[in-house]
Amino acid sequence: MFAVLITLLVSSLQSLASPFSPSWADYPSRLSPSSSIYDVLKAHGLPMGLLPEGVKEFRFHESGQFEVQLDQACNAKFESQLHYDRNVSGMIKYGQIGALSGMSAQELFLWFPVKEIRVDVPSSGIIYFDVGVVFKQFSLSLFETPPVCTAIKSESSGGAFRSSS
Image (tube, rainbow, N blue to C red; front, side):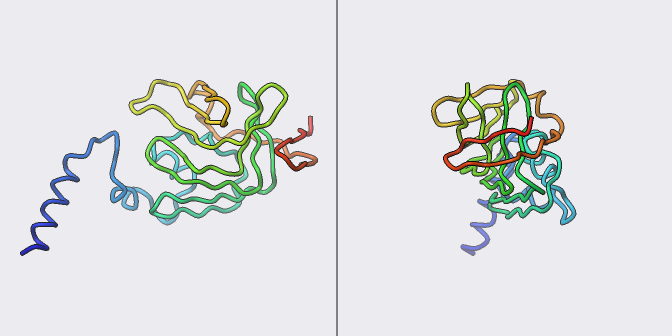
């Protein structure tokens, strides 16, 4: 009897969930085993262009934990430069990626690790990058398609990267 009551309570709560904030139970049914990382991003309300072309391999767990392996470390140009390490990982929730590692953004002449990325739900047309010292704002339209990434010639420690151009 108690198990039936719990089941009814859980199903009632799930039916009250907003369509703009789907529960984690919904994600596995919307993603097939042949889904790409770009499908995972779209299913979580995020633009495909957050990750560059050239994803060699990826892992995604129902908990939201993901890891992407690129062919090589590279830089992409939006309104400013973004750097992708060969391995990028984080925790995806609807409308945001937290605990992000392997991605850096250039501010002035310095590179800062991107710690979190989020979009407003419902969309305001803006995407926010938390780089620790500031939240960088970009037009969401810049991230509609995966960018072509330029391989970098060298990486130095401390978060500074030199582009190949």
